[in-house]
Image 1 (cartoon, helix red, strand yellow):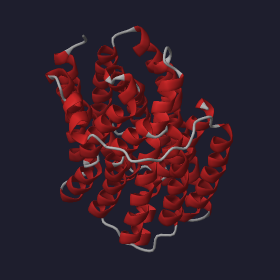
Image 2: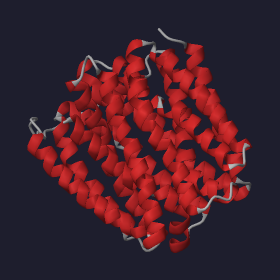
Image 3: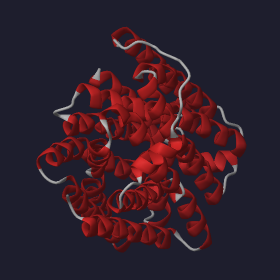
Image 4: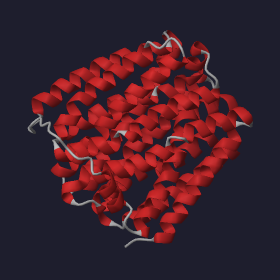
Length: 376
């Protein structure tokens, strides 16, 4: 089941991360400004964030499978809509549907792994989240092929077909029942539990800053490289792939380290490294320098994902894991989804360098907060 869930995560992330390297072509085809592109990507991340809590809560009340099975189909529909978009509003509709499917999938899948791998939770989450990086590498390859031999639209339909095939495998191997009944989302009680202590509240604030940075950098890095560093489309896509290639190595390792050492300490070290790497990226101009900065950034920021999930799951009661993880991710992903809009607006009004420097600053704030509250 871990393999199926990780492969499905990689597949949907392929569709998600093929957009940034193709963004100049998408913007030209659909006549979108940088601000409109940022809004479209914020919609994807915002809808994704909003549905994390209800999907997590319902996966606790019903079953993980009840939420996971339909999510594959919603994701497939979102891919078809994005690939077939004929204008800005149609593309936004596609990103919204895709974000809904991703929101339905993200928390129940993590909660199911948490149920199955109690003693090796960090390692299992590290393997699962490495699917993001496999999808990112494949997305970069697909983007280069699409630019060279076809159009940006050709990537999305094959992903939709693969998601349907993975749905079949999930249904065959799933051992949970499909349950639907009346359920109370318990929004207020979950929020009170999640924000019960100053430590928990400041941890959420730190992760908000982190995800604001992540969404800004990932959605515009290829266009930043093409415009600011004068990279070709192929070179920008290949450089973008470095983030994910090294993430395949980093995530399982950081997940394992967070099982052995204090999780907040692992997170702080990674964030400081990532902030330094972003500063280096802004400063350097050579291809070698940019590649080195992106590799360092990958080591720093990719280490966060299994650690963040493990921190949240550690704090959640066993019977409320899906709800608490979903609620927390709704908070920091929802606010963090404004990152692409921030970059689009600032880059259009000033330039990409100012926008990326601002993102590095938010990462410093996140690391400072985690260092201040320390490990328990």
